Image (cartoon, rainbow, N blue to C red):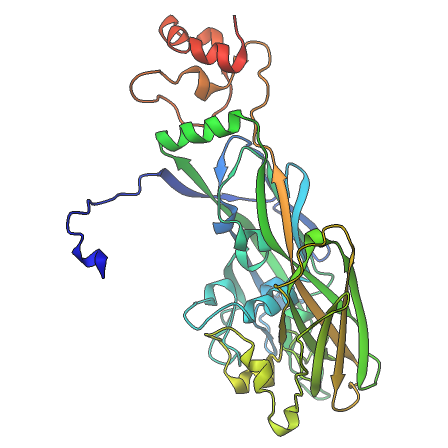
Length: 446
């Protein structure tokens, strides 16, 4: 209650950012985006302050029949646009920082356990759980969505600071086919499925450009001049697939062998029965397969400690639903009917071991044999720490960094931080004298 008495508190203004604008970047080849194509969107300028955490992927297109007429018996499913992409990679200075494979299913499993009812995701291509109240396309098949990058890559969700002085590149790989993005119904006599295609007409990376105030520019410059690497920590999302489970009630799955630097913190398990690549099945949903128990083993450590003891046929699955966040977007009925995902929290571990390998193993059990055609999916959210060096390049010949060359010692700064190099010989004597300390300190120009 003390804050209500502080009437003498002055008004504070946040003037740390002088300018904030969003730029659209297109791929190298903006003509066609066919199946299995690799789409590269690059930001070549290496003298900018960018904010990838608030960037987004703008996708426009149309679903039509093979003869370009309107589709009649095919509709886009929830998160259909992400199903159009097999992989999304984010690189800094040609070094891979983060990636998302099987983008449609990965974003669905991560999204449903993270979003809450207060979030409006229709513009990102998400529909209601039952997919009855909304539609991604209009009557002519056109769609236009803007997917936040933090729904696709863990670095955009967790690392919310600017990235300075580097080259950014987003590499997107189209899926081999678009069957997972639609659900079809047979029509005619005899009943047949119509041939369709999804034409992407525009793909843009909308990236925020941040221009710091003068005081913050100087702080950034002083830090960069020390040539210290900048660490970025985040949770990377890694999806593993067991394509075909044996028709037995129990199964042990050795998922991967990890190192101690990339420890799993959360594991999401889901099952699908004859949904992948099927015309009549919705690939954005999962099946419970009458699962009764799931255990995660990190070496010899078991999560959770006790058994789940689920019996879905007798409506006993409260322990699985309870593990969701405090404001789940799914109610209990929708959870078990459309998206029965099991989330295992393994964030608390023994941190004393730093070099030993870690085996990640899943053991799950069902009340009955797993149905034929059942696939298992394991989404692992694990630690990742990367470093980048935003230091300035050494000047060539008589070129020096522009922001150092013409920033007066007194008065207002004349140019913004991170501009192109500027020739020293074009400066007036006044600015040369005022910047003599910069010459000696940064470039050693006689």
